Each structure stands twice: as C-alpha cells, then as structure tokens.
Amino acid sequence: MKQLLLFVSLLLLLSGIAYAGPSVEMKTSLGVIQIELDSEKAPISVNNFLEYVDQKFYDGTIFHRVIGSFMIQGGGFDLSEKRKVPAAAIKNEADNGLKNNKGTISMARTNVIDSATSQFFINLVNNTSLNHRGKTSRGFGYAVFGHVTDGMDVVEKIGRVKTISKGPVFKNYPEPQVVIESIRRL
Image (tube, rainbow, N blue to C red; front, side, top):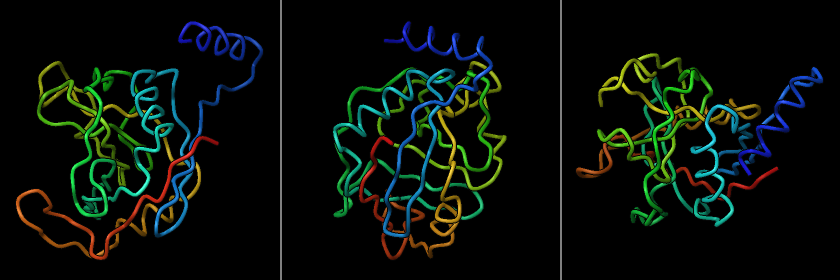
C-alpha cells in the first residue's frame, strides 16, 4: 500500500498535479472541521489516525484539554471522562519537516518519544517549541500529520470555551464539554 501511494505521488508530481492526501470531516458539538492528512510526509501517523477513524473510535469522545493560546486536544476520553483503550503506540514522525503551525493537527504523546496512540491536538497558534529540534525526549517534538482546510473558525471557537480543573487528569477541561460526534473520511 505504501509503495502504491509513493508511486501515485510520484506520477502526480511528474504530471504537475499537486498531491492531496486523504481528508476527513470531524463533526463536533460546536461545528464541522475538515482536515487534509499528509500521508506522504507522515504515513505512520496518518495510517494510525485513519485506523481509529475507520473503527469509529473517536465517535462520542471529547476535547478534554483546551488551552486558548496553545491548542485543543482530544481523542482519548469518552463522554463520561473514561479513558478509551487505544491500540499500540506508534513511531514518532516529528522529524518529517512539517511544523506545528496554526491549524495543523499533531499526535499527542507522553515524555516517551514513541508513545503516541489515539490522542491528537490541533494547534491554535504557531507552536515552534513543539517542532523537532533533536533526538532527545524534550527536543524530538510532536508529529504533525495534517492541517485544517475548513472550519478553523470552529477550532478557534473550541479554543475559547471556558475551562476548569477537574482533578489530576483534567487541568484545562472545557465546560461545557466539547464532543467529537464523529470523524469520517471524505
């Protein structure tokens, strides 16, 4: 599959046609967001994300972390704030040349470089501190794997939701909840 994708990308490049990766539509309780994924530069992250999309894993999850001058994060908790059980962690592709600029979607992770599973975030500003700067845990960065093509106003609306602290897990929890109703391929 990866070889076929590379072959098609090469044909498009040689023919002068711009490469467009797969796209998804994210329906949230505050509106719709369309995202184009970059399977050329972030094939592992895109395949991982699309597997969750195809399994409808994200349906009924929430944006559980919202920091208005930073990013909105979701993909890991259901409506009752219960952590969903993700698949195995993937390799971090933060060294792919893509930057954590406003409107990009990236894989969330812990302090372990290769720990991303289902959680993702959308950047509300240019977050240069999240870009790949080296091979250490702190410097490796967060893998960008796509960008918002429509609905940035919805992303910004989510970023303006009032937040509260709810125990040790939820420090920037939106009140009221912001629900990811579904994510589907376009």
